[in-house]
Amino acid sequence: MKSNRNLTRGDGRRLGNAALIAFMLGSLLVLSLVRARFSPIGKPGEAIKTEEQEAMRKGSVKMETLEAADEAAASAAAAEEEEETQPKAGDTTAGGGGGGGGASSAAVAAASTTATDHLTKPVCYESSRRSDTCEATGDVRVHGRSQTIHISPLEQEWKVKPYCRKHDAFALSHVKEWALRPLSTADTYPAVPHCTVNSSATAFVLSTGGFTGNPFHDYTDVLIPAFITAHRFAGEVQFLVSSFKSWWTNRYMQIFQRLSKYELVDIDNDDEVRCYRSVVVGPTFHKELGVDASRTPSGYSMVDFRTMLRGALGLERAVAEPSGDRWDIRRRPRLLIISRRNSRAFLNERAMADMAMSLGFDVRLGEPDISTDVSKFARLVNSADVMVGVHGAGLTNMVFLPAGAVLIQVVPYGGLEWLARGTFKEPAADMQIHYLEYMIQLDETTLSEQYSKDDPVLKDPYSIHKQGWNALKMIYLDKQNVRPHLGRLKNTFMEALKLLPHGHTN
Image 1 (tube, helix red, strand yellow):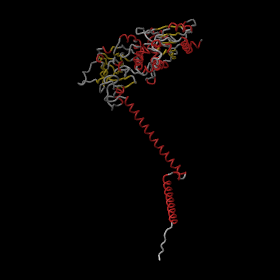
Image 2 (cartoon, helix red, strand yellow):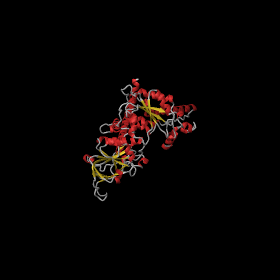
Image 3 (cartoon, helix red, strand yellow):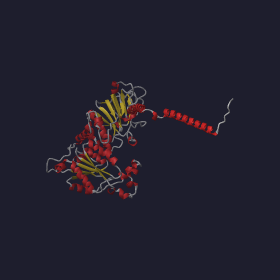
Image 4 (cartoon, one colour):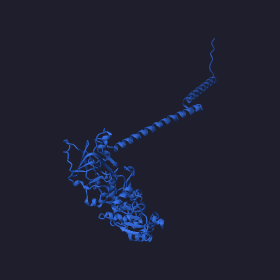
């Protein structure tokens, strides 16, 4: 007989509690499994350490791979940059000529040229950031009136403007372009010109166009690059001058004669066909008023350029030192004040001279201009121990100062330190000249009389700089005269005295 048993209310409650407990135990079991799978906390310490080391190893490998990739990319970029500055086949314009390409556009006529052939073929290349140069050996025939040089061997035409401001469109607009063409009887080029003059010298084509006439540009764009290029030939070089200016070449004729044993030629107006064994077209630029000895064939430098100048112009003093005669006025250090009249003039020049004489200086005034006899003025500068002047082309005469002399550049108001540094401060060291600087303050410039104190010209010169070179030049170089404070300037003159051997003697 089956028993029929009904569940009481108490029995149901107990059954529900048991189910709840079973559910909770199941949940705990599931959570434990999940935690063990995804959390590292439950792992032994050694296992964790092993994983961290593995991760670090992988990160290190990845970093090494990235560094290697960076190095490879850098090498590729360097190779690409080097390739851009090397001659490239198919691009035959150098400098500002033709399509206006830079020196990186100079090309080797044939990429498969052998080492021997390379020496006998012209190479147009970027000799510096400012200059393009072409060099060739072989059968060289120069026809000046057409600005053409016929060369054998040569496989293609090249063009170049032989002046050291390759990126300055305005300067190059005053420079004639020269073509280097294969010497060929083919229909592509005119008939082979016959030699009317033969020379064993190296022909050197350069231009006196551009900015020549300004002494700074005369030296930094033409004369010093000409020395850099021609010195290695020891006089066996003939200057073929394009864009010839008779007054300019006569002004510097003694320098050209010192560098060459041959007559200087006005090549643009020359009807001769001049034949040579080698030619250089375009001088090499190194730096402002300077020679980089590390880039010259035998290590010649700015010291050698200045030695050449002394020989060419008959300058007596190589070093700034007092005369041995105690009664000689030259025992007193000589101060040369470079005068200006049109702009950046000293308004208290006479007072400056009197103050300098009170310090023991023998004072001279000099005002060079375009008509000044170079030799005569060079001798005056060479006699000085200290030269002072406001920033401008007149300070280029520092090339004639003896070694150990002092240059004092007076820098006009207007945030022009960068201009003063690049033009005259940095070149001084290579010339073995001491350099001092006098900065014009707001109360020493005539600009403070022309503009209100709140005008950007006085308050924020760099806002004027941002308007471009013409705005900067018009205000801070063309419209400004200066009146140095004599007390401050006296301190600068006394500092100059201490740099001289005269001061050491006293």
